[in-house]
Image (tube, rainbow, N blue to C red; front, side, top):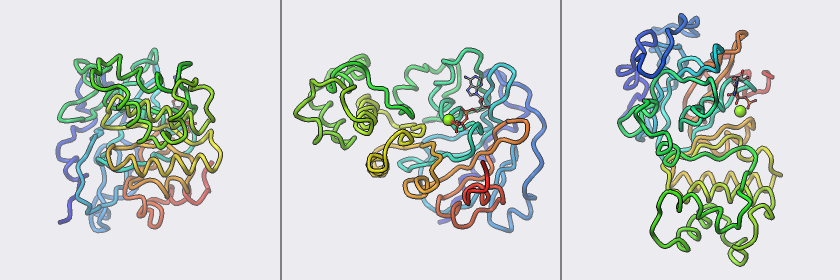
Length: 316
Ligand SMILES: Nc1ncnc2c1ncn2[C@@H]1O[C@H](COP(=O)(O)OP(=O)(O)OP(=O)(O)O)[C@@H](O)[C@H]1O
Ligand SMILES: [Mg+2]
């Protein structure tokens, strides 16, 4: 059966100009010019978002959505970094966010677990549906959101504590009362690090190699039993061997978790992701979603010329 997730989303997404004020939305600027007319798009089997006219590929895979972003905009003071992004994040899949520097990939990622709340002057408008609620709603507990939607950063940032404590720390703070040794072992196994560290769990996390530190940070994220893991260029500081390990790990993790990964590496996006979102900022530096679809489609049959230019290396 063919399902059009965007059609489903479109029917329930509020027009940008009617975005709820409760989440501090600003009256949105008029939409950018369409890249494709609605009728042309329908006959081409693609679906346009009424808010921002991004091109979407229709796809037939039966998959739940872990998150549904609807008209998500983000501001730093008076500067608008991203404009009304509407896209799904399929559950138990890897979704890659790609696009040139400054197009808003990290901002969008941080919106997804309320990390942008921590930046003074930052504001978000729109809606991100997570388990039937809008996680941007001020009545939703941001700390709880961050436990359930974890984050791994570009630069590995283990605590100056033992390997064991790095993994156990967050779980303990969250009141985990089960078998901690077991949780630490399971998390390190899932992060493909156990075999390398099992005999030296008391060693400082900072004494590990960069690639091992990054897997430790992934183990730490897993230990609090999140549903979604957001990764912002998790392998860009690593050598090629460590990078491939992280890529393999992402594929394995997708069996249990939903992964969203930002990467500048097109080969990596092609290797690890099931779905890809291409973001681009125009002259005025406001990032918009240009195209979303299955990675294979985006890479072999992009529907927007700008996507093709980017993935073939013609953009900065
Ligand atoms: N804390 C902040 N305060 C003000 N502006 C910010 C802040 N963080 C990001 N921005 C601006 O928001 C826009 C999007 O930045 P963001 O870091 O999300 O881009 P990105 O796509 O992740 O870039 P890169 O690929 O270089 O990491 C940029 O114009 C950036 O200068
Ligand atoms: Mg970034």
